Image (tube, rainbow, N blue to C red; front, side):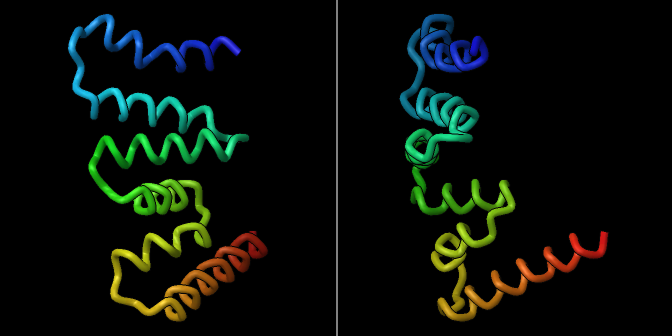
Length: 110
């Protein structure tokens, strides 16, 4: 419980210690804090993704895809790949399904 309180206070603490902090830095800090607190909350995860996207000035779907990749959620990263690659949706879906099957085969082999 105390960890959540400390994380929640980080953006305010940063402003208090550093004075005038650029809005992007606050959004970055807030996004990171919310991301760490978002394990069981889709709402927090989306707020985190929005803050991180605004901090870097990029499309939230890209951040969502990067978070999905970091978590190993290949299905959730399809939209990001579609936005940055020149594959058609069927090809992306096929690649994701192949990756999932290869992961299952690897896990079964262990």
